[in-house]
Length: 169
Image 1 (spheres, rainbow, N blue to C red):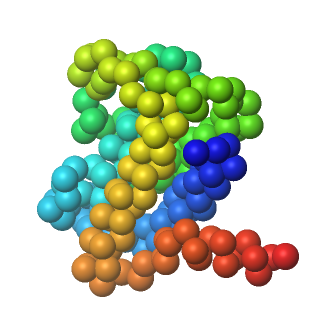
Image 2: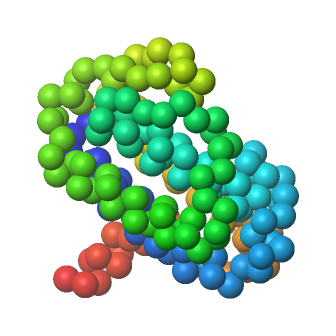
């Protein structure tokens, strides 16, 4: 895996977060906060999980070599607008991080503590890939629930971002 691939994934992560943000505007509070059978129950719970996992656990592990010990279902933000805004704003951090990352780390291990405080060591590049894949997974859960509830959903496949970028050329 190379830097260009991670830059693509970081840009995609921001793009997909922005598209999802626009789709969530029309969702009622009842639908946003109600248990929809997701692993983290609701759209709200799943978005909080994304904020915790991606930005309070994984980002600091990569950027600062340490992170907080937080449960994966920790509620960081109770205001839905601020929650979505934080996800979008913090997605930009990955883009900035990759502009200064030492690519020599890609061939090493990432040493960190899990959300429960257990010491862990995993391949750096593959674990970074996990972060972006994880976000895609949970956005997919949310869009599936939105579709089932009858809301319009954006097309979040990576190919649509590439098509948008190509149309701007």
